[in-house]
Image 1 (cartoon, rainbow, N blue to C red):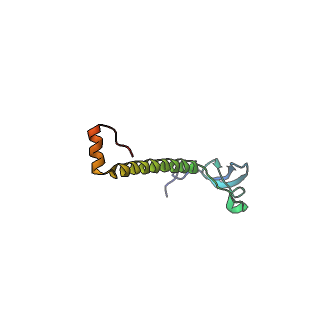
Image 2: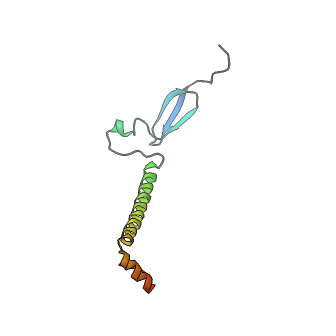
Image 3: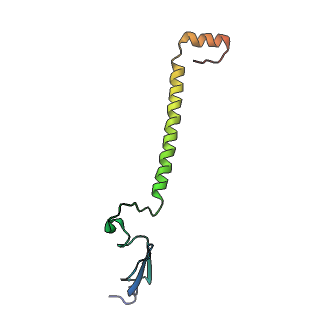
Length: 104
């Protein structure tokens, strides 16, 4: 086995949670920062709350709102096209003769 290849192992690494809880563990790092630990995680506490660490919920809500607006716009376009297609040939000819815009 080669010497000086493995990192130095710390037997007393301090882990600090976002809730303020700290505990000791073994690691190659001197200190570790975590967002959720067993003291504040909903699985262990029995609370029914959502843990969103990277803003994924906000991004999803924004995308869903944009998709809803796009679907409303495309639905309006389809309704306008359907309304225009529903004109008879006679109505289109009369509108062309008068040079007036076609309206229903």
